[in-house]
Amino acid sequence: MSSNLTLARPYARAAFALAREHGRLAPWSTLLGFAAAMASDARIAALLGHPRLSGDDALVLLLPDGDVDPNFRQFLTVLSENRRLDLLADIAAQFEQLRAEAEHVVQVRVTSATELAPAEIESLSAALRRRFGSDIVLTRAVDASLIGGAVIDAGDVVIDGSVRGKLARLDAALTH
Image 1 (tube, rainbow, N blue to C red):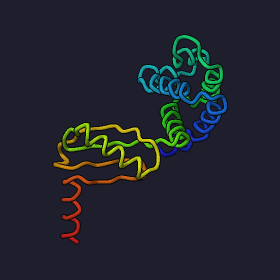
Image 2: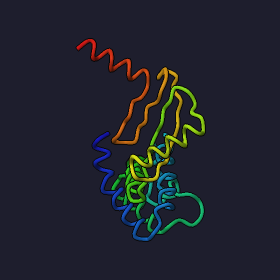
Image 3: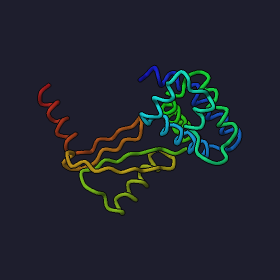
Image 4: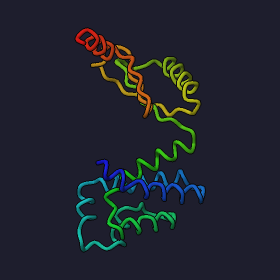
C-alpha cells in the first residue's frame, strides 16, 4: 500500500500542476474520480492488466463519453505507457488532498453515537472553521458503539470525544 502511495505521488503532483496551470482543478477532480472508479472495478482492472490491451483501448475504458480535456487524455496515456493505471485510485486521492490544501479546505468526518441536529452541525462547523482557519467540508456518520459523544477526524487531527474513547482512556490509566 505505501509503495503504491509512493509511486502515485509524482503522478498526482504532475496532474495537480497541470490542472492548476490550466485552471481546471474541478474538472480534473471529476475526471480522475471517474477514471479511478472505473479502474477499481474488478472486471475493468482485469482488462487493464491484460498485455494485449492497447493504450487507446484502455483510454476508452477509463474516459467518460463526450469531450474530455486533451491534457487529461495525455495524462492517462502516460499512465498507460508506464503501466501505472492501477495507481489511479491513489493518484485521485492524493490529487484531492493537494486540491483541498490549495483551496484551503479541510475535510472533516464526524462520527457520532446518534444523528446530530442541524443546530449542532452548524455549531460544530463554525467551531472547526475557527480552529483550522479554513473552510470545512463536513461528512457525517453514525456509530452507536460510541455510546455517546463523537469522534472528529480531520486528517492529521483526531478529536475523540466519545464515551467509548473516554472509557478506553480510563481503563488504560487504571491498568498502568
